Length: 545
Ligand code: PEP
Ligand code: MG
Image 1 (cartoon, protein in one colour):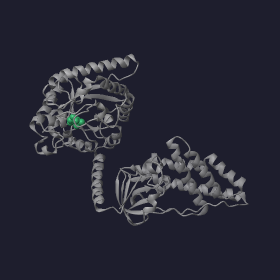
Image 2 (cartoon, helix red, strand yellow; image 1 turned 90 degrees about the vertical axis):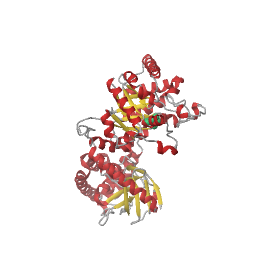
Image 3 (tube, helix red, strand yellow; image 1 turned 60 degrees about the horizontal axis):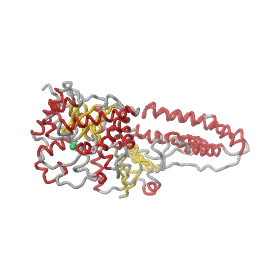
């Protein structure tokens, strides 16, 4: 098996045979001509032919990838008629007394180099377009034949050095399992078209890929990871077949659920959000069409660093997430370090019982300088979207009073410094200790929301260390004690005008969805890959029965 890595531009998996894309390019040599008028007339004729061909490609693209994406071929037509482009070609023919194809080739190189040198990524990618158009004119001038791959027979994985937009659209879509190119950029229209045509695509696989592929070889393309497996071994094949069928299942669900509300059969509305560890997970959140982010475990910013992340570093990460969610709810949990998440630079020292030790909000309250830095970054990011802040490991009213006092101090300081923050930031707490659940009626009036952390709630309620694999048999996640604590917390929240969600792993257990909804749970926040399954379960629940 040979593994090659490129950049995945459309996430999907293809398994099949390779077809190497060949292009019958006629090398353009510098050749002298005497009859300049005849040469210019040849150019005019090939231009007309090119514009007509692009018109046909536009019509094909319109049917397959829609108007917005087909427009590139109208732009290509405009490029052919562009004054500067034409002036350059005519000038070269007249001054150098050379063939039209040579003049077009030189002009194409010049224009492509000009685009490639631009700072803007979008404009850089236009270099490929000008080459594409010019090659078509040259082909028409020299009678070169069209490119070839995937004609007749089975569907194939197309491997090419690069694919021009017109080549991509001209391929028979039903015969293409995937595209793999040695070069290209993710902003190129080929990449955009592959995404629109829902075809797995990997670009930038390098010249090595071209050396290793051959017609008819078995291959697997993973558009998520950008990996291509040539002649895959049994283990890889089995793994990728499983990934492919899960992927198809997810996409089927997505198609069914996209844009639909999470409402039960009897009309109860519920939010299904996603849990993330940082800005890098936003793609998965959007891909799975989550309604918001119910838990951003901010401690990962600290775990990834070798020193305390600064206010600025944190602000940038929070702002990115809040902004990317474009007004949808984003709940960021303050630092939950300690226990199983240790960071050397905190200098916390060894503990006999870290899960019951100095962790999460306890550290924040004892070391308010760390807490205040994070709160400042959070409040500053709040102006960029719809932010909620939540505090972990709460056990008492007193802790919450201290937190609220510090939050007020931070806001007062920001105001004094003229730094903006939103006045709509919701504040909530995690219900993840039995103590918090039992006094939830006292805590609820102080907050906007609760979010149940069933991972820790289970560990503390059942006295089962969540890190200990030998205790699996004793870890009954459906234990009545846990469910009653959640139910009481839901009642406390609603009686005091707060809402309640679940963000621990149990939220993704669809055998409990109905029970949670009957308790009045308002939000379920799960790993991005579980979002669609939970949404599906919600929509199939009937609370009237
Ligand atoms: C939980 O305890 O359920 C939770 C969501 O937090 P974490 O898993 O990060 O401790
Ligand atoms: Mg927890």
